[in-house]
Image (cartoon, rainbow, N blue to C red; front, side, top):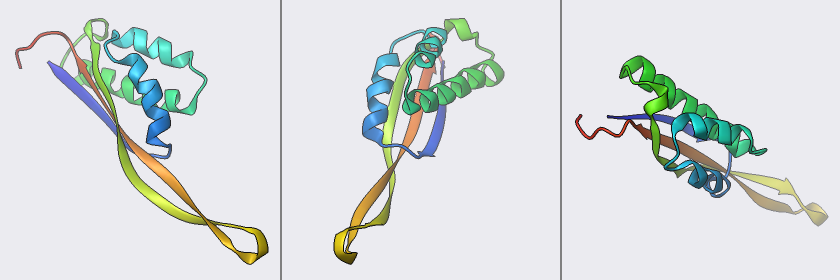
Length: 114
C-alpha cells in the first residue's frame, strides 16, 4: 500500500532540494529520517518534516508499521516564483527571483495489493 505526504510552497529553490531528496529514495523510512537529521541543510529539515508526516499518515490512516515502510519516491516539483527587486547602483533596480518548491514523498510497505 502506498501512502503520501505533500508540502506545498516550501520557500526554497527546487534545485537545492532535489540534491537531498535523491539521497533518501529507496531507503527504509526510519533510516531516511535519521539520515536527514545528520545533513546540515535547510532542505534536509523541510524534507524530514514531510517524511515524518508521511510516516504519521501511514500509521494513523493505513495502520501500517513505520519499520516496514520504504521511501518509494521523493519528488521535488517547481512551485511559483516571487519576483522582487533589489536596489542597484546609480538608482537602478536589479531583479531577484525567490523560488518555491512542492515536496511530495510516497512511502510503500512493499505489498502491491491496494
